[in-house]
Length: 273
Ligand code: KMH
Ligand code: ZN
Image (cartoon, rainbow, N blue to C red; front, side, top):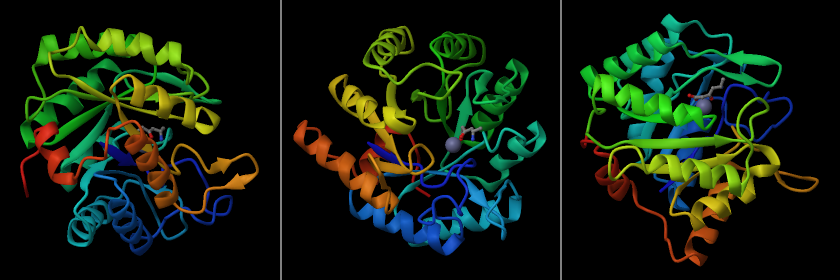
């Protein structure tokens, strides 16, 4: 399963002109990425000035446009930007995406702090259960997998009954994007409910090592300009589809061809809309 994270909240359009920031750019990106093997899109949106926003009206329009323009599973970020207040992040769920992210703990994030209090995590998890939105638990450090075990023990399985985590590796302040760190996470994931799946993404130059390690460890993949804007040394990423196509190529070489969106829906326990 290949997830594309095309935009994020951190990279500026002026620094990466290929970054999709308008709704038209996002839908075109979704279509292009689906054509080369993506099945899920992890979405952050921007306002008219290309700054990150959690505006509910725009989020609803985005979900509708992505559903009309592509077959991808729509996963909205509840992480937003480090400056976003909790109430805005919770309100994202009102846009009723197929999936939403749920980060499993607070982490230093470069010079900033990505705050995820326990009570906030519980609130996100239970509201997603009530709304039938399937979470992707974002893991920035090993101990956050233990926090997930505690969450599931105390508050039950997510909507759809399947547990899926995404290892976000190489954030300055979180776990490194190394084979050793991925192996440690893979081992800890075995303590989660049977059938738990994981994907992995490496920030910046850890992108390729993490991709290869995840393929080798039986994991799924996330790629995209949220996580890396450099394709190779001195070579900026031209498009998100370029990153997805590379991931698909590696996956095929590893005899693990990409899942279709329908396959991914079945795996993740997402009902058809
Ligand atoms: N932008 C980061 C602060 C998520 O999407 O859930 C948080 C993030 C995680 O990207
Ligand atoms: Zn994100």
